[in-house]
Image 1: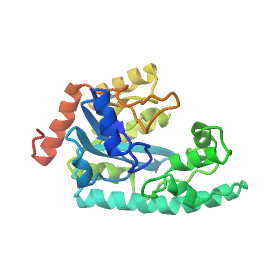
Image 2: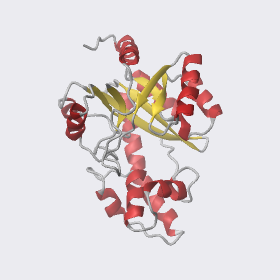
Image 3: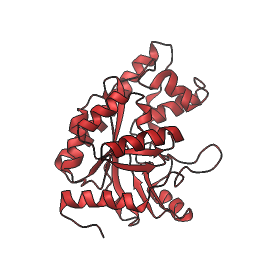
Image 4: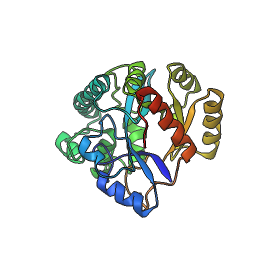
Length: 273
């Protein structure tokens, strides 16, 4: 079993990489892609287990939509990719200040230090801001926080403009990675999906915890039509309210994983064992 979309405490997940590994082993998941937001996996993290695929997820605002791109088997030493990561992380520090001002317009005080304390390395994320809004009783749950305030249509949304979408795609490829459009249903715009395909992505995340069966069929057809790799991932951020984990519930098949590895090998001239 393979899960190609999991987040750790390195970004906005609630499990450490070691805990993810243990949970994966317990649930008979053979390979896991750690797709932390904007953060390139360190060499130390790679030592946890060979079943961890080095990956990253970048988000950028494009035509008033927030597009998320997954990069698999990326070379974290690549200069272009490291620059993108650095720009994205610096942008997070700037965005929390703007969020603070936006919320103040609605009489809501944001304690930045408390928001940052939700993250292991005090890196800002909207997910942790959503948790903070729940904890101070502004919102009932994180979904309400995103819908009301934090999504691109929310009252306080702050766009991500640290680079271009095209540059993210090109940089992942320059780092010998395979770039995949994550959870396209969140865009709610097929024209934008078409434009992203034209930019040269390698694949579409067809199966995701955010996708209905109808969504899966739709994006599978789009991937096949455009001769793209189609992937699957849970987008697991930790334990759910029912005590279970999404991890492994939205699994990728080995044939597709071989296609991803093969494309990486072609770009890097290195065979993954």
